[in-house]
Each structure stands twice: as C-alpha cells, then as structure tokens.
Length: 240
Ligand code: PXP
Image (cartoon, rainbow, N blue to C red; front, side, top):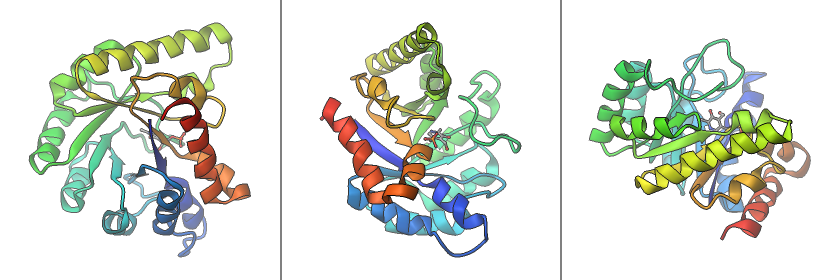
C-alpha cells in the first residue's frame, strides 16, 4: 500500500505569519527522501495554506507523483491544466469548513464534474473522486469517467462506539472491494493517524492512503523524516 503525504499544514504554518518558512516544497523533498510514495496538496479557492507558487514549483520538484486536490471549479481546472500534475483529486469545498468535511455529492455535482473530468483526462491527468464509502458511489464515479476513487475515512476516524466503527469499516471494505472488481484505483484518506491506520492497511483492496494532519503534527516533535518513516513502518508491517 502506497503512502502519500499531504503537506498542506506545512503551508498553514507559513501562512500564519505570511513568511517564507516553513516551505512546503522543502517538506515534500523530505517526505520523499523518507520514503513517501507521493505528495498531495490542496489548492483551495481561499489559498488558506497552499498558494499557486507552491503547486507550480512542486510540479517541477516532486520526484514521485503529485496529487493536486481541488474543487471542480473553472479556475482550478484551468490551473491544473497548466500545471499538469500526475493526478487530480476532486473534492467538495466550502469556504467556512476547517477541512474537507465529506465526499462529493455525486448527484448534485454532475454538472460540474463531467466537464472537469473530461478536460483533465484530455490532457492526460488521472482523476480521482473523493467519495463517501458507499458502493453506489463507485458505480457513479465510473460513469463520470474517474480513474480512481478516494474513500473518505473521516467518519471512521471520528467514531468511538465499537459497533459503529466496525459498521463504518465494513462500508469502507465493501466500497473498496467493489471498486477493485470494477478495475478502478482505490485510495483512502482523511483523519488517518498512527492508530487508526491499522484497520485500513489491513484492507488489501486499498492501493494508497493520503495522510496529512497526523504526520505533520507528529513532525513538530520528531521531525518530518521520522514522522513519515514511523507511518511507513506501521503500514509495511501489515502490507508490503
Ligand atoms: N484526502 C482528502 C481528500 C483531503 O481533503 C484531506 C485533507 O486535506 C486528506 C485526505 C488528508 O486528511 P488528513 O489531513 O486528516 O490526514
């Protein structure tokens, strides 16, 4: 299972003072040197953490693969088409939210997603849709022409009642399994940390996880290299 590191919160710290440091471009290189399989960054409409300059430079410096998270707006599709990252993950975005709050509403989003995916695919950018764990969403993602899905694990991460945790894990497992059967790539992410990653890493149908906050938070105390390696060690103990 591949580990991709979301470096948004390096930029959050920089933007707190509108200074030059810490630079997410530098962070991406450290993550890659520590063994990360990819770098994820979310360019938000309000540019609260990553800014355009970051994504343009990352496209040139990232050695593994760059996953640009974004809303399916005309502005973002234009930027993605200029930058040409390895892949784009389309997410819903609300100005007031602290972080992405859930998967795409695929029924409501149709009018935006279809032209966005077509434009991205036309120039060879792989497209992933961030979805709630529900097998119907996999069928719809395929209809939209997505190459991959990213299963939202945020609800699983927040639940504490064991029976609810198990039920949510089962929904994630079923969604991943159906996506695998249909031949679509399966990623997962949001809210994953050094504890709750174990159950996700045990799902053989999940190809890749995208993790940001917990790794960057640990890095404050251990350094980024160690924080990435600690996560990789947990994953590799379970999956090769
Ligand atoms: N996947 C998606 C689609 C996200 O929006 C985010 C947060 O930016 C993540 C994964 C990473 O979540 P976290 O920071 O909670 O690890």
